[in-house]
Length: 158
Image 1 (cartoon, rainbow, N blue to C red):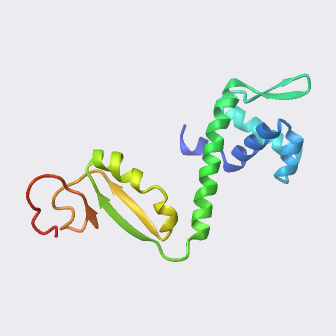
Image 2 (spheres, helix red, strand yellow):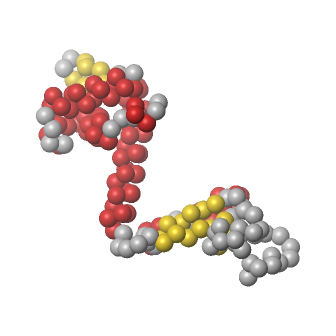
Image 3 (cartoon, rainbow, N blue to C red):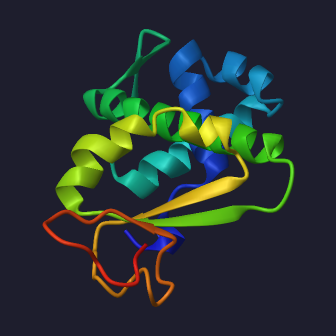
């Protein structure tokens, strides 16, 4: 699926609201849209995905198995967008970038778990973690901080 065929944020929000309420009318009221606009958004999304997301059973809506799978992903995406938006709204100035180079295993198993909550305590600093590490990266200014392991010293990396 190319970028032009990706669903719009509006379509994802409409789908999530309809799935939560199991009602086009209540979802439309929540998002301040007409029921017709809500229905059209979901129909276009279903066409785009080439899967039915809902089935109508005795005038009631039910999620299809594909709809249930997609709903979990859409909720995760919408939560991430909300988190990112709140993060940016709480941001108070220019962003600084801290470039850190680390061996992959050390970064994944030790460093990243230690950074839990770091982003919220330092909203003005974007952490750029690189897991490709060359001895000259620090000297050449490719990173601000590097973790090296092994015997001896690394000249110029004091």
